[in-house]
Length: 211
Image (tube, rainbow, N blue to C red; front, top):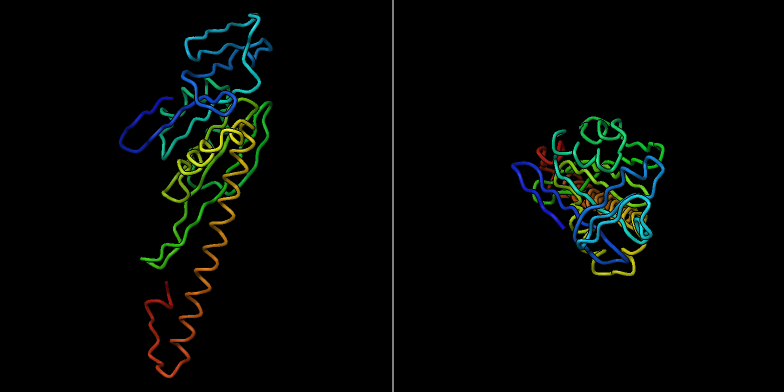
């Protein structure tokens, strides 16, 4: 596991084997050329053609928050991610979309959360780029931190052992829950606003009417 910190980005990079963290990173470049690949983990170095290549029960999860292109590219190149997927992940103006590349898929979704103190909806976006042996996440904004998703999955090794698919499932499950919570919060605010507007006290709080 490795962490990098800078002014705007926190990166957490971890390899999982059978549901547990192991040290090192996966190098999938050789698999993109049709060979077996090699692994550097726990001082266990395996090269193309060795008897024990990259194991099927391993995957790497790399996560970024508000990164720059320079911060993303080294990891994206190492994993063989299509440059167009990285371009979309860095954009703040892309709509939600799903793109399929040769050996990986990119899903960009919009995140929302109701801010009860400011009575507004906070908006962000998350891109998940996933393949058989990795998931690469890029988040913009403070909504729906993936650190919580990672911590929850790590507490259930039997689940995270299922690989990138379970990361995608857990994230989308939380995303839908957050959408539902936001709708419920807005409904409560609207009911309260109607009560204030049409009740005995007709002093309409205009600052809330235009929230």
